[in-house]
Length: 132
Image 1: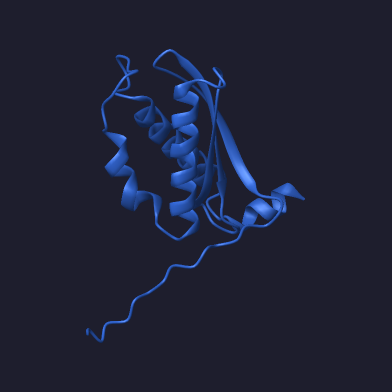
Image 2: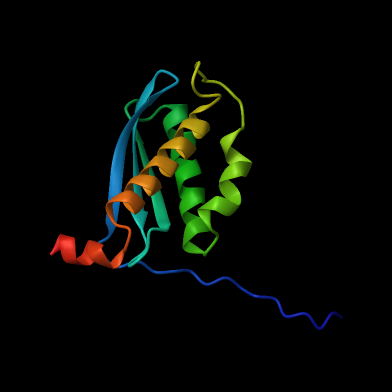
C-alpha cells in the first residue's frame, strides 16, 4: 500500500448574498442569459447559471447540466482555467458560423464575464464597498 496522502477536496460555501454578473448571449439560434457568481473577495468564478429562452427543450436541459457540472467543479476548488480548455472546443449541433457549439458560446461568455469583473474591480475587496 502506498504511503501517499490523498487530498479530499472541500466544498466551498458561499454567502446568501453573492456578487455576480449576467450577460445575454445569442448563439446557434438560441438566446441565453449566462450568470457568473464569484467567490467573496475574489475575481474567481464560483458558480454558473444558464437560462435559455426555449425552456424545457433538450438544449436547455443540456446547458443546465453543463452549468451544474461547471459550478460543482468550481465549488470544489478546481480553477476555471484548468478545465475550460477541455470543454471549449467540443463540436456538435447546434452550431453557427461563430460557435462550434453552444458550450463554446457558454465558455466565451464566462470568460467575458470574468474579464468584465476583473476590469471593474481590480481589487475584489472594492466590490463590498461599492455594493453598500
